Image (tube, rainbow, N blue to C red):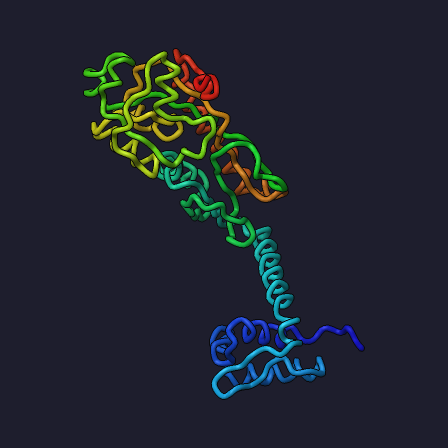
Length: 315
């Protein structure tokens, strides 16, 4: 029996028909006529020497041979598509697709990226703001800015960008009312649920414990995204335990102040991630270098701070 592979066109027709269990839907997907698709599948069956489908009145079903072939065909075309996308990206120097969390995109990346775009007008920028961990090959993404604890980047290029820290932040008017850490026990506190995965926790209870104060009550508005909590604080709705990476612009422009020295640090950090070997592509290298320069703007906000690791505050 020959191991000679059948024509790729016939295998592609089979893959589509096996997924849809319909010649008509498969033909629509491939933009061919049902007759042309049926011809391709018939030629494949002749090549194999066995039927792959049972033709019913208004549908088709896979034979035993078809059921054996279908998973490998689907996986093979998925692998081929991923390899093709990777090869095309190697030759593409005109576009750059970046993914980051919604809060980081809104509060850090979007307000600054115009400067990168002006410096690199030949690069077309595309953004995907999502908390979902996108796959570089499957989702056609060039670079990711991810936040979290170490690990999970095996087999990828990964370099740290920002070491996160948090401290109470509020509108300047509120800062006149709540001048001491003790006074914050009576302040409207804003909570962020997007970092509840961190262990040890980075929350108000940890900060008050680090300040030598009792834990606050459980009241106060909760936000699923940190940027929404920061916006609420900037509008005077309450006090947020603000992340410096997300609040820097509001601090710089006076919408927020951070009047207390005590700040909590965490092992969680932002890092720049891409497929290994892609970090030296011209547009990715340019983005990496630009981000490295931009994060230096955060350094002045460390002056005069008293840093305590969240783990130490938990003891």
